Length: 171
Image 1 (tube, rainbow, N blue to C red):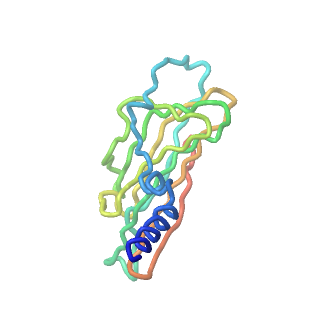
Image 2 (spheres, helix red, strand yellow; image 1 turned 60 degrees about the vertical axis):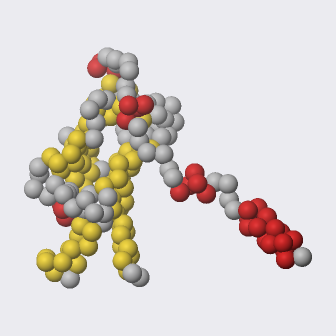
């Protein structure tokens, strides 16, 4: 009788477990080589631009000697339903304006309505309180430009903090 109850309990637990759990907890990472731009597009049909995006690796708490480390999720969003965004540069700078990381070695594409992300880990303090990204991109003329946003978050104990920043197109 005990084996019957144990088997029934085990079956109930397995049946209630979500089959999507593994997919949700392990989102795919960017594979820049799969996004590599393989065709050449004439400059005459493209509108090129550059966007500045502030991010924060850390923020000050209580005073200038105590900081709160943050994870930054940078979203590169193609808001067009029909056209591709071409991303040429994704450079990360620290508080002092020094480039500390280049994410792209070649142009990549962002498909219509697609979002790609760059994550700056919480323990990566190289950016500091004034970190930022600069993105160079292109779209076909008369099309929607990409949207750049960062979400910074961290939790410690029962304290949590999160906020967002948005990109500013450079002239």
